[in-house]
Figure 1 (cartoon, rainbow, N blue to C red):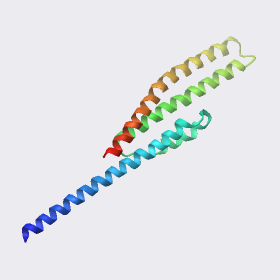
Figure 2 (figure 1 turned 90 degrees about the vertical axis):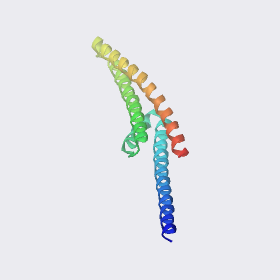
Figure 3 (figure 1 turned 180 degrees about the horizontal axis):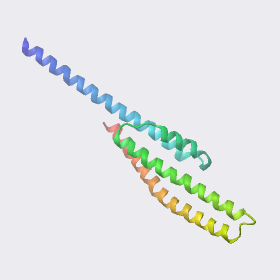
Figure 4 (figure 1 turned 45 degrees about the vertical axis):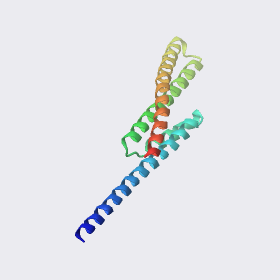
Amino acid sequence: MPFLGRLASIALLCVSLIACRSAEARAREAEAARLAQAIDALRNAPNEGKAPLLAALERNECVHPKACELKQTCVAAYRLLESARSASARARDLLAERDGGPAAAIAAAGEVNRAESELLRAGDLTERCATSQGRLLRESRAR
């Protein structure tokens, strides 16, 4: 009888471990899906509507390292896009000034250069964001 009791305890422990692992897998999948939804909403929004969605993504909590890495990459990408949009708008405003003269033109050129540089970096990061998002979703569903 003691052998059967130990065997039953071991079986119960194994079932418990499987259930725990399964709960963790479900938590990872839910976290990945939540982040993916926030990222998709941000990606698909018109440029004028991205700022509040970026703030929402930034507030989105993450626990698992790969999910946090995805969030960090995507936030960095879309921050750069927002910054480039702002630089471009400043350049337009500077060029629209009637009394700006050569100083305004030089400042506008600097803003355009900044916007172009940030757009290039953002392009690389948004590509990494999309690739990492797909990978994380696939991995979370496979567990």
